[in-house]
Amino acid sequence: MTFAREVISRNGLQRLGTIIEDGDDLGEVLALSLRAFLELMEHGVVSWETLSIPFVRKVVCYVNMNLMDASVPPLALGLLESVTLSSPALGQLVKSEVPLDRLLVHLQVMNQQLQTKAMALLTALLQGASPVERKHMLDYLWQRNLRQFIYKNIIHSAAPMGDEMAHHLYVLQALTLGLLEPRMRTPLDPYSQEQREQLQVLRQAAFEVEGESSGTGLSADRRRSLCAREFRKLGFSNSNPAQDLERVPPGLLALDNMLYFSRNAPSAYSRFVLENSSREDKHECPFARGSIQLTVLLCELLHVGEPCSETAQDFSPMFFGQDQSFHELFCVGIQLLNKTWKEMRATQEDFDKVMQVVREQLARTLALKPTSLELFRTKVNALTYGEVLRLRQTERLHQEGTLAPPILELREKLKPELMGLIRQQRLLRLCEGTLFRKISSRRRQDKLWFCCLSPNHKLLQYGDMEEGASPPTLESLPEQLPVADMRALLTGKDCPHVREKGSGKQNKDLYELAFSISYDRGEEEAYLNFIAPSKREFYLWTDGLSALLGSPMSSEQTRLDLEQLLTMETKLRLLELENVPIPEQPPPVPPPPTNFNFCYDCSITEP
Image 1: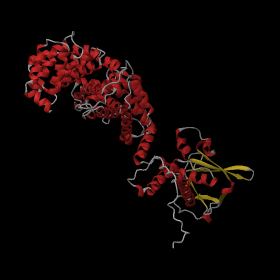
Image 2 (image 1 turned 90 degrees about the vertical axis):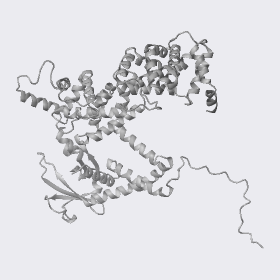
Image 3 (image 1 turned 30 degrees about the vertical axis):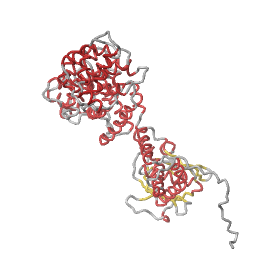
């Protein structure tokens, strides 16, 4: 800074400016003059706005000329970038004097420094342009195959990409996505004929066979009622879809996404809508509501409408891999939403939970920076709901430090004791007993019976009961089954009392709650059959009976209980080590001393 101030005070800038303006030497002298001028200006002592128009025009000439030293154009481009970003008036001059085609020529030269500086000036010109001008400029650049060139020759170049180029690609991506902001901020106009027709196209693509109209021959009221019902089937929260699309964001951008999906993936669109609109078990995934929320989510993840960061470099390579990247990403996301919805067996009440999982799936996959949409689709579909839960658990354990080898070793040592505690709790629950229902062949659930384990764990005692009666005493239960006679525990479809019931939906719940005990009755094998009143009771009884039979307790409830007890016990054991870093490996044992002369022999009596 001291040197720069001294040079500038002695008219150093003016002398360099004269060398650059005269342009007598197009080789090393000009390159050194441009470099010195740039470095002096970067100190901020003199404003870029003080530069004269003839000087800027001369630097523009160096960008537009062909015959000169190879080191001059990158320096001239860098100077014009600084001028454009610092002075709106001079920026307009640069924009009018430097054709976009000339910048494209520089970008196609296999010189990384020249490419980077050309991209820097291009993004500076785009940032300084008005929204309308920016759209025209980007449309022209895409027509000239800039996207394909960036994808093939810059992103997939053999040479590693520099941080500066990564930043300019981030800016270019942000500015391109920024073109979606007006649609995102504009609510649907219920009086717009064009927008009403777009909604009808969306409905007809899902529910009307080609060449037919569902409203043919119907009165206006009947046709209106039919359309309203079909819009509700389409997943809109209101029978008038305009009310759903009045929310901004996403405004009309959500409608654009839905139309793009219906036109470019018609079979997937029809399958999604018809599959969910025909369901009657409250597990239908609402297409329109999901599309609106997914559009909001994508706008947040891709920072649509947000100002560009001055340092960020996190562009998505796949954005330059195809046209209409945002809409294509939506098509992948909406099918992912349907897939995740089914994996979670979600209902309308779970909508927000499902969207949180979908957000996590998309964010995690985007963070991997897949180079193509197909790779993105493959990776995001592999990230199932179960995998998301596993990753969450692993991250939580890493955060708590519970995956360090010493902690894992401690957990393994605690497991037998805690499994004994769970076993004890399960047997106590069996001793308390449970009221079960008998399922007759006609599916009449009108008979009750009670079963419990004797306090000495040697007998299962059971008998019929009246509904509403208080739990019976052990002495009043007429039937007994010695634990010593029990042979095996059967669950689900292996149970004899549900094996013959067919495979309809009505039997699915029975399969999940059914269990049986096989035992010896004389020379025959007999069964004591149960239908648990709830999934929790099913886990408790199957665990308890497994413990009596000497088998491992393998239910989901046991896994959850063991994890909870292990976590609590580990935290209690480590309370005194709070904020003390636990090493990955035990500290090494120091070597023995060279001699033991320091030992004190207590047997020697001092005089």
